[in-house]
Length: 354
Length: 260
Image (cartoon, rainbow over all chains, first blue to last red; front, side, top):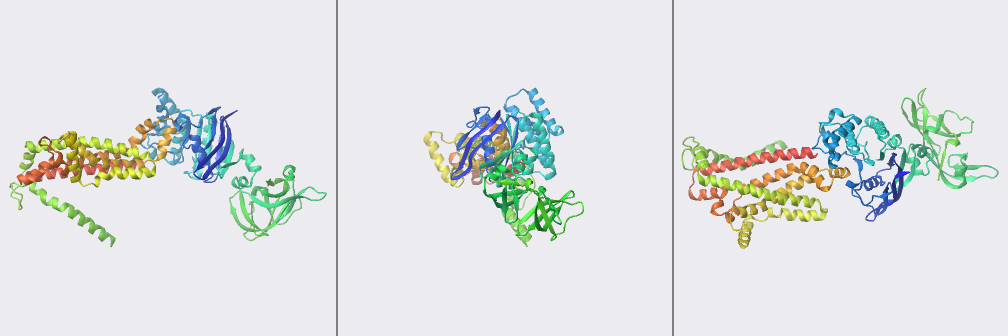
């Protein structure tokens, strides 16, 4: 049962079309992230959901009711802004109480709810402070508490982590995940950070050029991307252009400028012709000499490496001058730049893209 | 080198503007009844005279009444204009802004004649109401500019945030926009007050004997009986303007702090 249904939304700004026939269905209590590069239309979609932007055509069904013509104040959606948009003339307490005062709730109930939310975001001690006296991370939590205090049907988050440093971002991602599972509210998060999307979301909608390019779990998007854009945008990848052909008396074969290999996935093999083949950097290994175990081996030179203790990420230059990235085990140090090595990967760990 | 130019120009300008005033002020404390140096002795009699003589006290009272009244009108007109203009589109905003600021560039003599004629025709004639209305036309553009500046400085997301939390437009205006733009309103109101308080040209056209304002009394004093009480009034007017300017400055500083 899906609680929010986005149906065929189109959005034009003059001659420019920002959204092309976007449809998404989001289940009640789900954590969905709209992931895309800047200018992809993800923020436009969020503004449409919030009611700040009219659509050119399409519908938004909330539990079977079309809410597209409702103004933002009638939608009962919480919203965490990119810059938090806290009211500078009100204390933390008054900021969080605002939506309840709008709803004319009794004083005792307001007090109870605000205190509960302050507890939830661990800001109990800061109720009397002004927003500008708090750190970025604390302000973000106030914004979150304010958007959740009135038990909205949906929480929209507009790049909530973009102004925070990396360490803080990590902690808050975890906290947001926890709050989501505690409250069970439907969350829709907008970000361009694929790591953030993968850490927090039940499902990710990859947005590109105003279209939903893919909509699936993080694992499915990472391991089984359907398009080259998704493969490249979600995680690191190596892409080889090539052809699929069936050789006489043999299985299907993928041929690229660098290598040939049998195709494992029979469904993808049905479609012969020009395709892309993706290898994730963790699916390839670095060898000093080729081994004969059915792996594809590519001779290469080390162009550069990034050592991170547990492993090293190598950028290799292949014979045809293209780059290939792979993680190598760095227990006995990293290979020097310019060293001759082999990159090897098993055909069953590669992914064919249409 | 740039420091030399900086201090040079600061000293020159302040000297140019303040020196004539400073030269006159000591005469308010002079025992002689002529406005001449050297001073003969120190006295506060002229202050006592100004604060007790009905000509001056009535004029002071009239000026205060007119200034407060025209301030209220100016805040209503200029404030509403600024709020309204903010709701229109960019092109319309430019045209309307120019329109609302235009009374500043019309010579006050022209406005004075126009108001005297127009008010006469509709039967308001001279007096308090005429002065308040006419002065509010001078004050309104100042309120308009002050308010629109503070409204432009507001983060538009604050209003959207209020909307997303269910607040109606009026509720948002009362709880978010107005409190945050309040320093702009207050600064504009003070500007309007002091403009009316000091205004002489339009007052000459519109004041009747019962509503003589301080600048007019000062003007008449200059013509009829040149004595230190005039300097006392001038000194008090300057001090008041100074206090108001300091207040405005503080409000604007506070405004930018809360806005950002």
